[in-house]
Amino acid sequence: MLGHAIREFLTYSAVERGLSMNTISAYGADLKQLAEFLQAKEISSWASVCRDDLLDFLDERLEMHQEASSIARKNVTIKVF
View 1 (cartoon, rainbow, N blue to C red):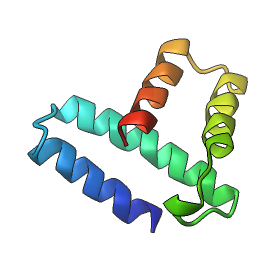
View 2 (tube, rainbow, N blue to C red):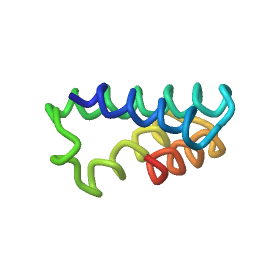
View 3 (spheres, rainbow, N blue to C red):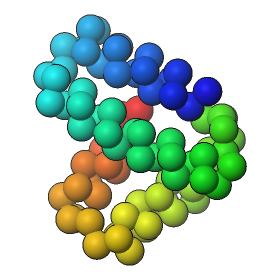
C-alpha cells in the first residue's frame, strides 16, 4: 500500500511537474527508505503515519551519521510528498 502511493507520486512528479530524472530518483530512494522504516514499525498505510513517525525516521538518519545535506533532502522529499 505504501509503495503504490510512492509510484503515483513519482509518476506525477515526472509527468505533471516535469522534474528531472535525478530528482525523481532521489525522491524515490528517500521515500523507499521511509516506507521501509514505517513497515519495520508495522505501519502499512499512509493514513496511519503521524508527525512523530516522520521525526523518528529523520532522527534515525542522524543516528546513522548520514550527511546533514542528505537528511535535509529527505525532509524536503517528505514535505513535497
